[in-house]
Length: 463
Ligand SMILES: Nc1ncnc2c1ncn2[C@@H]1O[C@H](COP(=O)(O)OP(=O)(O)OP(=O)(O)O)[C@@H](O)[C@H]1O
Ligand SMILES: [Mg+2]
Image 1 (cartoon, rainbow, N blue to C red):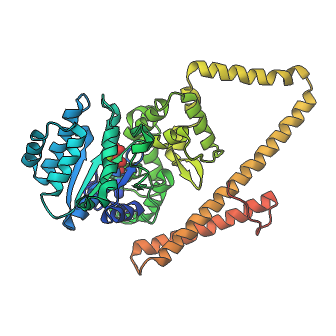
Image 2: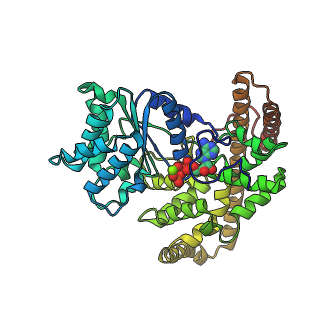
C-alpha cells in the first residue's frame, strides 16, 4: 500500500495528499464570520475532512472547538439520553464534563432540548471569553431516532436569531454536516435553520486543485493525475482510491491507469463490494418510493436530456446518491466510472419486475398501429429519417461536448496565468498539457463543424 494516498475516512489536516478546494476557503470564511453554515452532500466527498481541517485552523486561531459525532450517541435512545450524549461529547471536547453535568442536574424542570442549549449558553460559553465553534457531523443520524428532532434545529436557529438580544451568543458558531437534504431533516419549515445559513458545497477536484496528488507518483505524476481525473472527474474518494492503486503498480501511463480502473470498479461484483459503488447503488435503488421514476430520471440525465428543476424531490434524491451532479443547470452523470458501472443495462435490470412488464406492454401497444397499417415503404422512410435526425443530434451533442472541453482548458490556462508566480515543474507540465488539450479540442471543434455544415463563427447554445 502506498502511504501517501488515503482512501476512506477523514484525512488528517496536514495529510500531504489533502487537496484544497474552494469549499475550504468558503467554510473558513463562514466560520471566521461566525455564520451558521452547513455541508449537506453525498457520501465520501470530503465533508468530515473539510471539517477536521477547519477545526485545526480554528484551534490555531484560539477558538474553542467541539466536534459532535451523532453516530456516537446511538439511535435507540430517549430524547433525554440523546441530548445528554451530545453534552457529554461537548464536555469532553472542551474539558467541562463536570460543569455541564452539574448544570443538567440543577435544571430538571427544563426539557432536554432547552437544557442542552441553555447549558451551551450558560456553561460552555460562560466558561471562557474565547469563541466556541460546534461542528455536528453525521447529522442525517437524526432521521433514525425514535423521536422528532425539529426542536434541535429550532434551537440552532434560535442561537442565531437571539444574537441581537443576547450578544454572548455572537461567540457561538454552529456548523452541521451530513448526507441529507434540509427538508428531510426538518419537518416544520418555520423552524429550519437552513434558510438563514451558508451552504458549503464540496465540489469535485479540478485538475488544478488536484496537483498535490502528483507528488505521490514521482515522475509523470501530472500525466497520471490527468488520466485519473478523466475517469473520476475529481470525485475525492474515487480519485484517492485510483491514485492508490496506480501508485501500487508503479506505472503512470494511461494504460496502467485504465487497467487499475477496470480492476477496481468494472468487475462483476464491484457494485456490491466496492464501498462507494455499493453506496450509490443502494441510495438509488432504496432512495425513494418510486424507484422507476428515479431510474427514468437517471436515464434521461445519462442522455443529457434533463434541465435541473430547483426543488424537485427526485432530482434531490438522485444528487444525494452522488450518481449525478448539476452542471450549468443540467443534471449530468457525475463521472465516467459511474457512467460505465451504472449503464443502460443496469437501469433496465434494476427497474422493478412489474413495472418492466408494464413498460414493455405499453411499448408494444405503441408499435401495434404502425404494424397493422402495413406500409412497409413508409416505415422504411420513417426509419431513415429517424436515423439521420439521431445522427445529427449525436453530432451536435459531440460538438457541445468538445466546446465544453475547450472552455475547460481555456479556463485552466487562465487560472494558471492568474496564479501568483509559481514556477514548479508540475506547473510547467500542466500548462503544456492544457495548451495541447486546448489545441486538440479546437481542431476537433472545427472538424465537427465542417461535418455538420456549421460556419466556424456560429455560436451554438450548449445543450
Ligand atoms: N480534501 C481532500 N483531499 C484529498 N482527498 C480527500 C479530500 N477529502 C476527502 N478525500 C477523500 O475522500 C475520502 C472520504 O473523505 P471523508 O470521510 O472526509 O468524506 P465524507 O464526505 O465525510 O464521507 P462520509 O459521508 O462517509 O462521512 C477520504 O478518505 C479521501 O480519500
Ligand atoms: Mg464524514
